[in-house]
Image 1 (cartoon, rainbow, N blue to C red):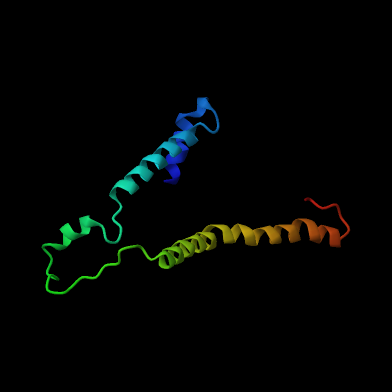
Image 2 (image 1 turned 30 degrees about the vertical axis):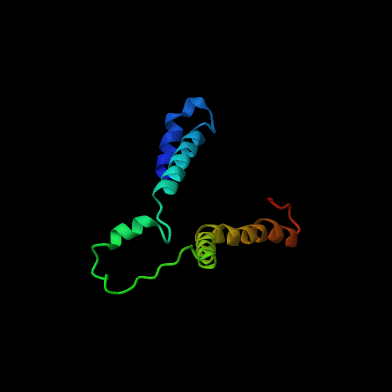
Length: 115
């Protein structure tokens, strides 16, 4: 997570500032390969093997053949909005406050602004 990148950056200190990013790129590439190999989609034949011994055999299980793109993009959009609200909203709120405190207040008092 967060500390792993810092540890890698410290260990690769002599190689340059952006060289530790290659480690992250390799890890992301490996995760992309594993996701493509092992992700189970709707209508995948691997799901049939899981349902053979279940207690729901007397009911007909209807699964879609494809993923509902609208629902998928609603989930992705919600995740992006949640990420924006969790991490980006606080700094965005601080920027106007900083401009007001360090620029406009000094200009109103006819002093030299800090910013």
